[in-house]
Image (cartoon, rainbow, N blue to C red; front, side, top):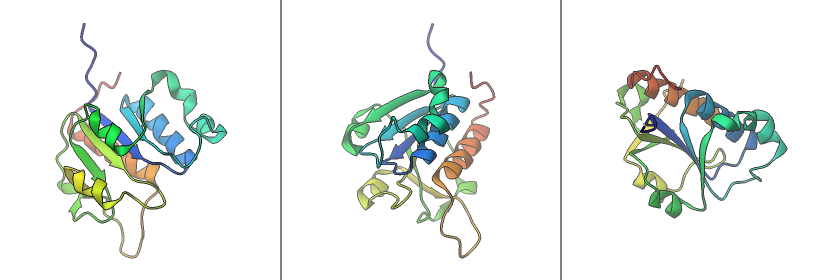
Length: 157
């Protein structure tokens, strides 16, 4: 029997806040999403704060570590959808596809230009003027929920 295909994946580019990474691990486990962590991270992956925030969901988590951006690109990944405040395309105009990989940048610096240029699609979550950005875990949840809604993915199990 073939495994149920993953509707969506999330990739964290060099995450630097363990609590956010843990929250995204939990999000991925609960929604049945594949999670890619692109190193180096700004913390140890076995950090106590990550265990508290996310790893109690590790049994349901499909997660992969990649030593670098280049190593991640060598994996069989789908269309790269970069979440960035610098994008001109708002989330409301995006049509997600099965197999998309939502790429989230570092909390402190986003992604370098080379990573942004490699993305197939760059999307922003509209916010009120004068606000800098949302928390990366919150943003990942917003994008994942919208993508799953569009993909009519009611059975996540």
